[in-house]
Length: 400
Image 1 (cartoon, rainbow, N blue to C red):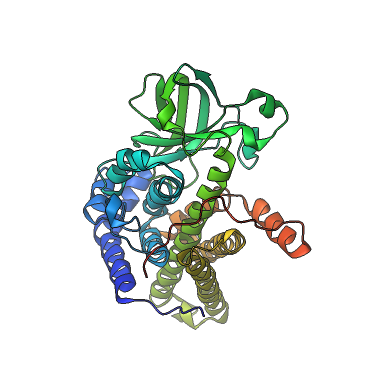
Image 2: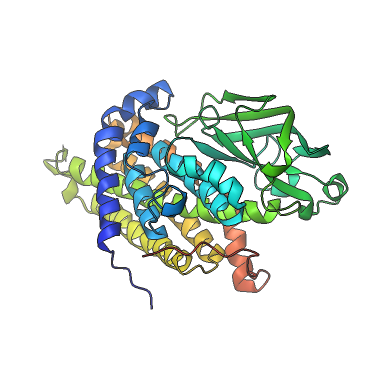
């Protein structure tokens, strides 16, 4: 039986993340967004609040919270700005949770513990200049060499590229399988920024998430030790899909925060702005737009919470997570577009936050699986072309 009521611990996480957003994100976000720079105080603030590892078990430096708590934290951080939620998505969803599930005990002690404690920052490297939705189209290679591998290639559109200490990187280890597009030739590696041959750079001129660091990672003859191979050779594609399940979940929950931010901004503004001698909140079409935001927020929230409930039971949730991500991102785009409309000409100016919401919302319909990918996934489930098989490794069991 699904219970959508929150525990005291979950409410405490929500309230703590909400306070952090109000104190550490919202006051300076307009300035950092205009400058296109990550707030240098944000990562330390998240670390001090234990948000960088709070859903990782205590034995690995975390707080042992559950997936619903993770979703609530993502919603509250994105209420402040998408760039803050992205940090949790890549650091926890795309790195720490996969390492918890797939890595060896030695790897967990070396990489997961400092990441969970907030001592190190981590991210995920799958997308390349010519490979986004087509994950098997990556060109990065890791050739065996003595006791390790020689990594070559480039990753693109990587969040925290210039900030992260650790990268979970995917590359071909079997070139014959690469020619056949057989995904069992892809492997996953933990790569440190300190390794010789690793370089990064920032992507400028983004439409949205300007206050977040996004860039590229280049690998030139990078020697990766054998012990940094995650799980086993050929498991990279499965690990990457597991990563995306967790990342998409955080995006879905975060998008609900953006919807709520749009709604709240419109509620406040519509009670201050007058046209035709009455407050615009009295106009029926403005009411309709705000009502649509509320509806979008409500059903998108139930979708991500359903996916989170499944994850808490250690059950496969690829279908439910995909649906939650697709719908929540669609509703966030619609809410942001309507928010700009409610604000009228002022919505076209960065004097108010809704233009930033509008720009940020667009990105989520592209990353972590485009809306087209999720549309096809949902159709394939209904039509019987797609069925989820059991994972080689179960989701980590968490306490509620």
